[in-house]
Image (cartoon, rainbow over all chains, first blue to last red; front, side, top):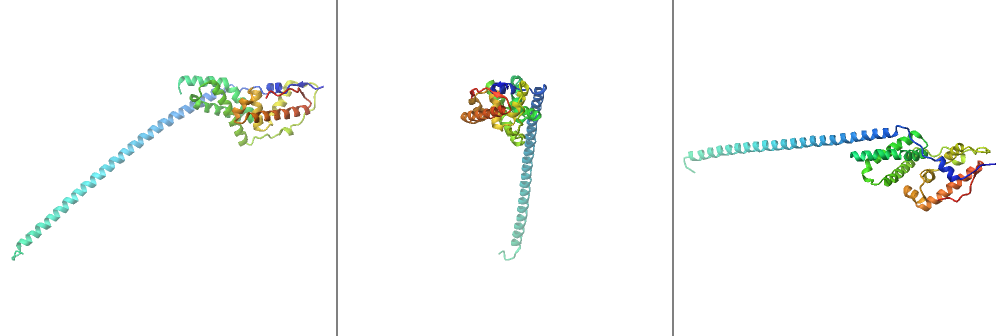
Length: 104
Length: 174
């Protein structure tokens, strides 16, 4: 003679919750703490990266400004030289004209 | 995360670890994999805790995430039953079956069910959810939950009866 069972009651009994290992919570908390540390490290690394990027951008801009200043200075010198040469040529031409006997 | 949230997380971890682990274990049938998945679920909760206001919401979220992740993992790892329900040998009928043998037999039968059917049986009999709650966890119509639960119980009952265990003809509380 077989035992008659109520399947649903039997399933409830058979499928009772089981507990994980005793140190489960401890290990989850350790992983959470590790994740927190990693997140903090990532924040600091992002801040450091932004600072480095800021310094590089500032240095680049300063370098660009210096380059522009140097170019402007060189252009100024070139202009002054060109004006001096032109002035000398004009002066020479003027003297040559004044030396001609017919005065033309 | 504030100190208060840390304490809340620790409380929730203590309160729900057995639920999460049991769902994962019975869907994955591998204690190590189940524990790893349970840890991942709690870590996901850790990052999301501030958006989950009530503890009921957290419980619902944990069940939902665990079931979906475990079903995905089971499918990915090809953990489909190595022994299908029909392949489980039908034990010789014994005069009086001790409970632990019956429990073991039922657990094996449930473990051999397809993932969706297994999840429904677990949520119904392990977590004591009604079909409407199960349908919310699994994102499926409650009518589908009811019919799948009904079919699965009929299948299990038939299998048990063929193995010599008579089951009471009770109406399904689905």
